[in-house]
Amino acid sequence: MAIKHTSKIEFNVGLDENKVPEEISWSAQDGGIDNEASKAIMLSVWDYKKKDTLRMDLWTKDMPVDEMKQFYHQTLVSMADSFERATDDLKMSATMRDFCDYFAEKLELKK
Image (cartoon, rainbow, N blue to C red; front, side, top):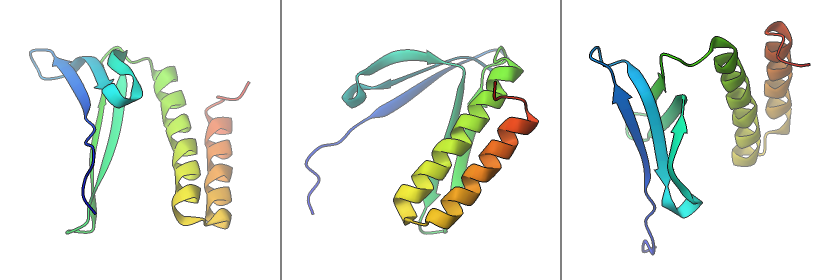
C-alpha cells in the first residue's frame, strides 16, 4: 500500500534555564490546529521492534494541580474508549471505566 498523504503534528516546548517547561504549544494542520497553547502533553509511542512503549510526559511549571488531576482522569477515560475501539474488548473497557469512576470519586472530581 502506497502512502498517499503525510500529516505532521508538531509540539513546541519553551524551557527555562533548568530545562523545565514554561510554555507548550502544538500544531496539527490537518486538524485545523495552529500553534495552540497547552499546559501538558502525554505522548506514547509503540516501538514494535522492542515490544515496548516509549513515553513523554511534560507539563508546564504553572499547571495547576487540580487541572492535572482532571487531565489524568480524562486521559484515563479516553484510554478506555480507545482500548474498546482497538480491541472490541467490552468487558475490560468497562472495568477500565469503573476504575476511572473510582479515580474521579477519590479525587472528588465529580460534582
